[in-house]
Image (tube, rainbow, N blue to C red):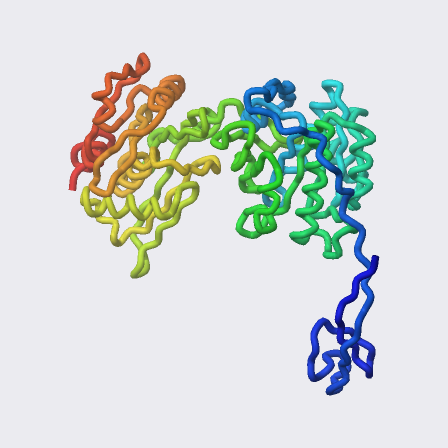
Length: 461
């Protein structure tokens, strides 16, 4: 059934406008637009409208049994996903160009294929020959991986329903388009419609799926967060592509925690799991270097011991610089102000540079004491003892505050051979027992902590 719409047709050039204007924008003639009734045929519906076959059920009658998670060949990825890949889940992974997203997913596909499952790898940006060359570099020769180079959504959905794979990978979602939407591939409407259809197929056939998403210059998934709302999990592969280590974080996970992080090392044969990141981050540490302090940070349920380096040098300009890599710049400014005001470390004419070794980014305040000790160590040019770790949050008054998961942090430090730890004095009154071989030193203020870490002369104003 056709519908009637009012349009304005130019009697000179025949162009059609949605509203009346005194001058035709195409030919430039005046008073040539005439109101005309145009017959418009309705578009085909995006998908057939079906009545729901599900009946409302009481909460107590809902079956909570679910399929077992699919264990992936990478335990670090399993950790981030919450214990494995949930059947029927749609997971979005993003990251900077060249960071290793396609390499990671091809290795995951190889692991699932070696376990006997079929994997459908759909690429909209690379040819089959390019994927084959990457697979040869990674040493992947499984015949259970089915490759497909396609950007049209309808054939992709048809092949997924026909093959019924144990895992489907779409690289990337911004390159896929559907003819139901008139906009170009990668637009917000195209991305939303394509992701919704892929989600519908994944849920209907219980097929787990990975989608690769482009990122903006700010590092976020491209689009106004339309993809994050559609998918079940959002993962980010972080790191500098000119360095070896990669961090996989989860910012959304309907089936697990969002606090876990997976650590990988980029090698010639692909991404290699780093099962003990603490030892890796401390491997090249100089024990007696000034400006170095050891912190124990929590990434989800995993404690990680990292080295924090600081450099303090006299500035050549009127306004000293503050540069932070791996810590929040605002947190660095706060700690520099506390050191100057409460402890008396004269930093008003000092450039301060802080770096977390290994590319790890610390977002919790438990590393405040380590950052402050590293800055003071560089300022006084006095090294921190090699067997000492520091844990604590620094307040604006210069006091030290307790942190969470303290026993886990101390156990990790003791396992790596550290024998002393400076803690906030308040946690010593809780009655906890430190690990064997680890001496705990309580400090109520930042001044006392610097006194214990650097010595009497350097710990006071």
